[in-house]
Every structure is written in C-alpha cells, then in structure tokens.
Length: 399
Ligand SMILES: C[S@@+](CC[C@H](N)C(=O)[O-])C[C@H]1O[C@@H](n2cnc3c(N)ncnc32)[C@H](O)[C@@H]1O
Image 1 (cartoon, rainbow, N blue to C red):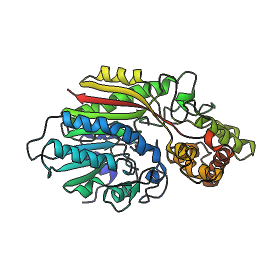
Image 2 (cartoon, helix red, strand yellow):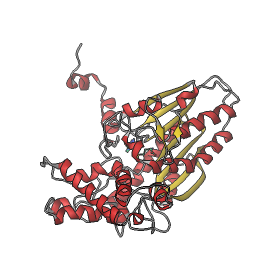
Image 3 (tube, rainbow, N blue to C red):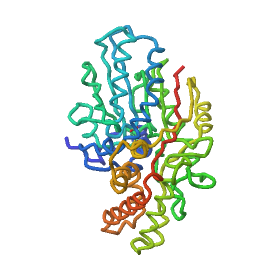
Image 4 (spheres, rainbow, N blue to C red):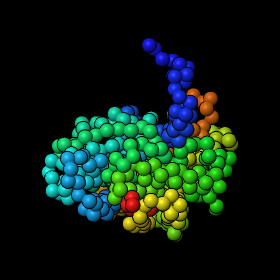
C-alpha cells in the first residue's frame, strides 16, 4: 500500500502525531547550514581551532572514563557526540576514548558504538567519509588524525533528531560529549536582532529577553534529554561557547580587533557600495546564544539529576593567528587573510546570507564580495585579526 501524508496522519494515533510535530519543531533544522559540498569535509578542513578546543577537554574526559564503573558484561560501550558537524574534529578524541575504555575494562576487544548526532540537514556523507577513513584528517599542526574505527570493534551510527530532543533510548549512553554546538537555539524564530546593528545577543548592551529565555529553555531541554539517555554514572561533557566573567566571547577577547566589529565593517561596506539596502544592512540576527557560567549552572540546578564534577571557563587562542605571529608559516599578509577568514565563514555564512532579500538572485555573488571585504580588511593588518575561542568546559555525572 502506498501511504500519502494524509493517510499517514489518519493512521497515526493522535498522541503520536502531536509528538512528531513537537519533535520536528525542536530539531533546530536550518539554524546552521553546512558550508561546502556534502562529502568534501570543508568544515573540518577549515576549522582548525576546534581541534584545540577538543584537545583542551581531552585529559578531563579520559580521566572521567577511568572513574566510571567498569563494564564486565559483554555489553558494548556507547559514546554519543552531539553536534558533530562532519565528524572530523572529534576523531582523535574518540580514538583516545576507545583506548581508555578498553584499558579501564581490561578488555582489548571491548566493543564500542560511536553515535554521531547533528541536524537532519547535516553533511552525513562527510561524517562517514571521515569515520571510515576515506577522507584523511589533519589538525592545525599537520598531525594526521586516525579514526576510531581503525581500532577495530568500533561501530558508527548517526542520528539527525536534534540535540534538544531525546535522541537515544533511555539508559543507553555511557558517555555524552558535545563541542561548540549547543549555543545554537532550537529555532530561528526567536532571533530578535533584525533591524539593529548588533547581529548577536552577546554584542548587545543587555541580551534580548527572547534569546535569553529561549536559551534557558533549550539548555534545560538538552539536560533533560541527556539525563534520560545516560546510564547511571554516565558522563556528559559539554564544551560550549560562553560569555566569560570578563565579558569575552568568541572572537572578542581584548586581543587585536573584535571579529564581530570586522564582520560589521565588511558587511557595511556592501551598503556603502550600494550593493545592499538599509533593511539588509541591519537584518543579521544569529540564532545562537552564548550563556554565562551562571546561566549554565542555574539550568543544571533546576533540572537536577546531575553532579557537577567541574565547570571552568577557558580561552583557546586562534591557532591561525598563533601560527602566523610565531613565524611558523611563510604566508604573505594576503595569504594569511585567505587562510584565516574561511574559519569564520564555516559557521556564519548561512546567517549572513539569510539577511539578504529572499527575492535576490545574486546572493552568492554578494556573499563573495562580503568575504572579499573581510579578507582585504585582515590583509591590511593580519596580526590584529584572529578568532579566539571562549568556552565553558562543563563535566557532569548522572547520579
Ligand atoms: C561549530 S559546529 C561544531 C562541530 C564539532 N562538534 C566541533 O567541535 O568541531 C556546530 C554544529 O552544531 C550543529 N547543530 C546546531 N543545532 C543543532 C541541533 N539542534 N541539533 C544537533 N546539532 C545541531 C550544527 O549543525 C553544526 O554541525
């Protein structure tokens, strides 16, 4: 029998169809669109700083594995990586985690399942090309990163449900990790900065109420979902963008120029050149929110069920600027700019593009001009430009 959407609705019990609608509305689909062609792994190729962010969390994560109850039964150990993107940046950590699980359980053959999680619109071919070792991965320093699947008895699975929902069966995940992902809100609808020059809630003198409330609700939804999925004694390590005590956030750490001010200059140049109109100039509104540590801890307290093992703010310097200023590259000023700017493009391109009038058929050409403007700005004074990372590193144990 061929099922139409209508017959599906008729056949589906009422409660289930409502549940599906609410699941879909919390999937976060569209808040972030991958750059590049699926299968090419452009995100990993252009996002070297995220390797350093993950490396910074690695000792704590491996330490937590050794504190867990050892698995003596033949059951597999389950790791979930939420907001994995194209899965390239976490390969090294996952390999170390598999080795640590096996050492801790005194079982070289211990089966491990790696669950890759992201939005349904994610570049899933890139995920599996990286995980299967078909596309090789290098970090910022040229080190080759091995896939955990090469260790044997490691299985990879994917979920496109969205991390604001429960993605896995209750009591099934031993270790949940998420890097640089859970700042994305569950919906674009709350983005309230269109019509203002701020672009992001973190740049506003006072974060707008709509983003603030949505971010608090989303964080609680994330915690409740992970709490269901984790086994007792399971860990959730969430490494997420934050606004630090000093007021620092991604790309704005008091070192050199603010990346956000440079975005604004490069975007406004389009307006000065008559390429975008007044409305498009002020239409940027990132559907993401950098929580403060207090906001993270408040949500954890309200949801309950977790012990806070540690919660720290950390700044990871931009590896592009660090390598350039230390003289470890032989790049000219322009070459540095062309090398660095794409790392800012991987996560922001789709938001900038959506500020353009939907009727336009020259959107990609305008976006090309915008990125050229930014590259030219950086090339004038390269050492002033970088994208330092400001994260909350939170380690939770399900009690
Ligand atoms: C900057 S990337 C981080 C990738 C990787 N974890 C890393 O650290 O390099 C953020 C990822 O979060 C994903 N993301 C955003 N909203 C999501 C949602 N609601 N559910 C699952 N993934 C989401 C995006 O699709 C994107 O792949």
